[in-house]
Image (tube, rainbow, N blue to C red):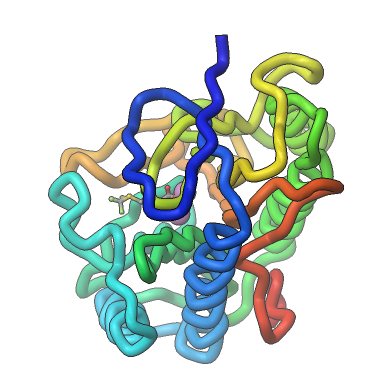
Length: 274
Ligand code: MF3
Ligand code: CO
Ligand code: CO
């Protein structure tokens, strides 16, 4: 049985499995946090070039987050010590910024989560590093389409399973693999809250979507099989078959007649080429 909890301004919320339903002040809070996330991802566009160190990009994310009056929610989260995740090529998610450099032909996801005035704006985009082969660019395009097809299903009266089913259908039509081991999540005062937003599933199943729900959709799509392997660092998730993997993420809120994307790019830099 899905439980919903109406959250009033200033209420303390717990990770108790309930789906939170928010009001106008919360939408405003998420709008601001989401906008900052999007501005950071916009600002990274000219910096993601061959030869750049990923820990330099992490420094830029941290500085921009702080300058925006926020803190990176990942910093210190379950022992994670960085301001974003940077996941290149066969890394599915949670790639750790390091002294390693990006090289011509790489595809890379950067995932940021500024925590601004108590609200989490969680978003990621893919970037193309220099000249990227067509096969990889196609994966990136289709992954963006998967996110947007999922978002089209996000409206009152729909079920959570409608989102995953639509994403899975599109990805598999291209013979790509939908990662099952990680999913989208409720977001808001909490970074990761109920419900789990899976990216593969059965239409007409799962919790009903109601106005005031906030959650992310963040499909991870592999050129090959969906299986994941965790590296020894405890964070980095790679495609077990080492195929390329892509991901885009938005944070959104269900409205009376659809949804509001909190993390849309103010500059219209939705997907590469930027
Ligand atoms: N931003 C990621 C998400 O979309 C979570 C990263 S948690 C970290 O949910 F600790 F790996 F940074
Ligand atoms: Co997320
Ligand atoms: Co994220």
